[in-house]
Image (cartoon, rainbow over the protein chains, first blue to last red):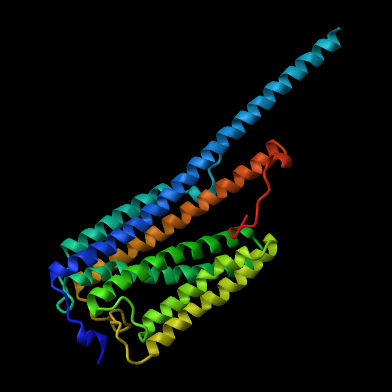
Length: 75
Length: 244
């Protein structure tokens, strides 16, 4: 006897939790993925800000050295 | 600054995905009639079947990109293949879970081991689940990409063969609603199913592009860091399953 033969269709009232569960799980999967992507994006933004700060610090340091070299040359 | 190539068209694709999925959900619950045999539980069909179809197509797509990688030796194809398989795995987990819920409600069992369609799908998923550990086990990035591509091609070719073998099998419990002769779906159900399939396919394409854009941005950032600062300032990449 097949499984279908021993398992009659559920009444709409009884089937609703299963249908809701399936759709909620699907939405939860998508939402989890989007959350992971958002966390990664925040991390990337932080790295960009860090890189920008390091470049600015380096440029500022380079400018000071250049000024001192120019002054030495003038003397 | 030139935007990364992968991000092109992403906004439009995202909007189209949200619109199509909303329409599909609307059609599922407010337009498609109740199935005469299964009743309300058949509504899972509009989610479960598109997820299964799109995930199987995603595995094949991973194989197609892997062929392109081996032919051209372009690492971008390896990345595309990796992301296609990664996304297909997520979708296949969705298909397995929704299928199990449907099976429990419809057949009274979470899983039926003597049903070829279910078991063959599980075999495909388990086979592709070894893809990431395979990549992770190979430290050298060049070799990792090549071996992963060979795996993706062989496993990708197995998907349609497996599908045909199951179709030819006898004693199916799993219903056959999509056949070459037109299937048994009435017009309203067919329309709802096709919109749902389009929605899930668009979702796959959108997430695939998002993942590629994110990975590409991270690689560019790393390369920029190495150029602007120095190699010493960039922490070396550890062993990773993802292409780098």
